[in-house]
Image (cartoon, rainbow over all chains, first blue to last red; front, side):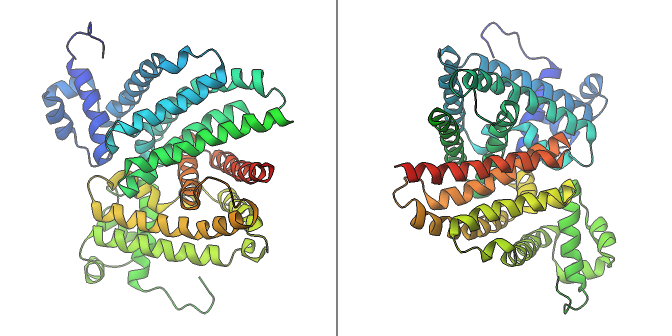
Length: 206
Length: 206
């Protein structure tokens, strides 16, 4: 949110409600009524903007992905000159986000929703993958630049490592939720940091 | 399942139905009716064995954890002499399980259910963590033995690395579900394999 932003529309309030409630309760447990109540809008307004809860869910994945893109675009790590410093800075920023949040706040709408709906709603599943893949590809740009500079002959694949950063973060959230302890997510993400360091350290030896 | 096993009881059929349906559809979308239908038992039988769907879910986490323990206990990797070979063999066995399965089959009941219920059902959440922690501790035994032999001075923590193996596997499932591609889970787990190799390789240099 920027200071110049105007007041949220009913559509935006419903998107924000979906992000909040689905992360807290899951998708099937989130009713249209509870979405309207949370957003402070009428059911008429809901169906004016969205044909169904599924349509809202898909729009929410885009809303989520755009908000995340803005958050990461303005983060400090982008200012580092060396792309490997940027990449490590990205991981540190993820750690920072985890430390400042409650569990439902810090976890991922896409990863949560896809666990529940991957088999029963291909449209929601694909929308979740689009968002995860978009973010992984942004991280992949830093990885590609860092590899070109520091590990040009390493055998690992850039796109795959980009996806792996997201797999670790998603898995970190699953374990943190199970333990009801947000610091466990940070412990897990620290292993990702060490892995990236080892991959590049190892490349320098070769 | 062993050949000497008797026919499953109504209770066992309901547990197996919960494992199957929750992984496919999620917890809230799985009704008591659909559990009874899948198990081929009456609703009377359901409530004879379980007070509620939540009680079945918690029993299913124990059923799941016990079945997994049996599966891993008889796997080939246990025969390796060197605990580091056992640990790498464990990861290879996880890869083998992924390659031979459909997505709902190869993924984890505990990780799926906890994503949905961590905030709204503390009892289900704790039961999921118990199962994940039990398995992580089994992997932790191999890690502890491998560390004592090959990396006694390494600074990383054994229990944490055990949990990390499970975080990666859970996150691998989330991404594979999103992409609707089971091979992506294998790609992610191969990074875990490389991380373990690098951790121990790095320790030998010190």
